[in-house]
Amino acid sequence: MKIIQVYSTFNIYFILFVALLATIVSSSKSNNADPESQCRIVSKAFDNEKLVEYDTAKKCIESFPFDAKFADDTIDAVSHFMSSYYVFLDQAKEEPPKGFTYQPVDLIKELNSLREKTFKSDYGFITALRNTIFKLKDGHTRFIDICYQSFIYDQNLTLYSVVTTDKEKKQKQIIKIFDDKLDSSNNDCEVTEIEGKPAIQAIIDFANDNIAYSKDLGVRFNMALAPSIKIFSQLFTLREDLPETSTITYNLKCPKKSYKLTRKWSVAFSSAAFENFCFDTRNNSAKITSRDKSTGSTSSGFYLVNDGKVGVAVITDESTNSIFGLADGLRQLTKRGAEKLILDMSNNVGGDPTVPLFTSLLLFPSSRSRQPNFFPTSININNFTIPIIKKNFDTNSSDSDDYNPFSFLSFPSGEPFKNVNEFIGPRKNLTSGLHLNPLTSDEVQLLKSTSPFRWTSDEMIILTNGFCISACALAALYLSEFYKIKTIAVGGLLDTSMSFSTFPGGLGTSENVIADEAGDNNIEVPGGNSLLLAIREAYDFNKNNITTGVLEYLFKPADYRLYYNESNARDPSFLWVDAANILNKKP
Image (tube, rainbow, N blue to C red; front, side, top):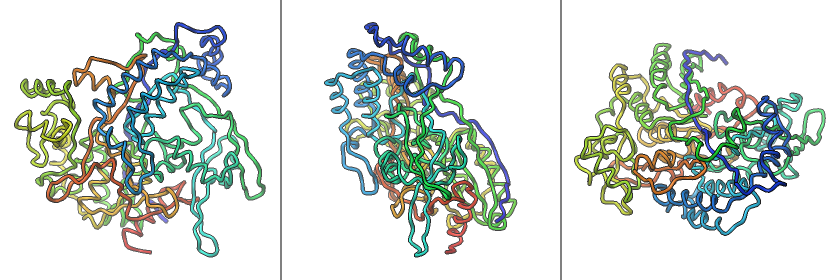
């Protein structure tokens, strides 16, 4: 099998879990649980860039005392923003559509129930709050506390799931060790049990109970394991929340022996200066915004398989600085004679809302004059936002935010909004009229300067491991829905349909950005902590431009399925060859 690398670009796409936040020290500390004394060892170790023991970290984290007033104020703020701006608040109460796996949640009711509880520590309260929000299974929505969530708990090994075929040609799914950093002789040993439970079931339970970033269990299962990469991945053995136990015991079945491996958690801090995070005053804490992002490099690459007849475009993000590399890479594939195209959108971390539209128009330029040419969205509006919307319209505001009608185009015409009422719309609960994101000037210019590519929709196929999030999900769904490009999902659970994308909610942002844009100064999340939430929802629609459902709650399984094995989990080119065979309609 010959793989030819054609073109590669590297860009920095910033994703944030963390920003400078919070103090959590109450003025009513007890001498027996003084955080500064309990955390002295942790602070010293992290200042010297060394690891700490699990028990030491646990004592430190749990030494911050529970403050009932702080908890009440936090619940007040979270409830206010979620009830006023969270677009899926009512739908979250409903039973999941067939294909999704999660429990309905009456979020405001459950948040209020936390007021009736007394917690042993501040960490106990924060964890309960985060877990309540995580029940939504919405990757755009979560509560962040930098002091606690900046600890990293690492097993120094990663697991993966492979599907094997026995002599009777029956398929079986097992868990194996993908990479053991401490003992490479364990690599590819089968994991038969985890903590006395069958390994597959242990991962499924973890994906159900501890992973919140997809409504599809198969996608969450992939997120728990390797070879998913970047954010939201390898979550079983690399965690940001304090594990319940100091070790995990694995029953291993290796070629030469079977034995139990008990592995401790190694604990590090993901940012420097521990005291600056955990012992600052609340008033000095910095707030996270939707524009703050932590560094993490991603790369896009372009390759040829099947003797150069099939091109592969590996698209790892949807950021605006990636569009030039995408266009140039596709040109290179065309020049090298690629007759068909695989769009590998696995491990795609999403990005900017205009890039999915740009991608579809780049591949299908003949649709540039068609209206509408992408999924419409809407936002919830309220008494805070209506005056802002009217002011923005009346003053011809140039601010780019969610409450400025000039930031959007009307659906389905693709024209600017004529008046405020057209933007607000007639829908119930003061939900805004449907709107579209206009392309940026760079995107418009690049489309004009790029000649059409040769590939038709029948000559393309999309490949993902389900980890195609947010803007990537919108791009993949649109190419599948309206251009009928076939899709392949990789991994997940054996013989269970799986999504090829996840949380296409529309847009997520932070509560302080919302407050600033909406003029909502009534309340804020205390202590510098931050709430991220989905404030815009995207809709599927039919040829008559009638919306047919909220994309976040529509189960869209892939057309084809591939599973990981010992080869393709480590070298994606094997998956590309399998995808090329499907594209060429080979068995």
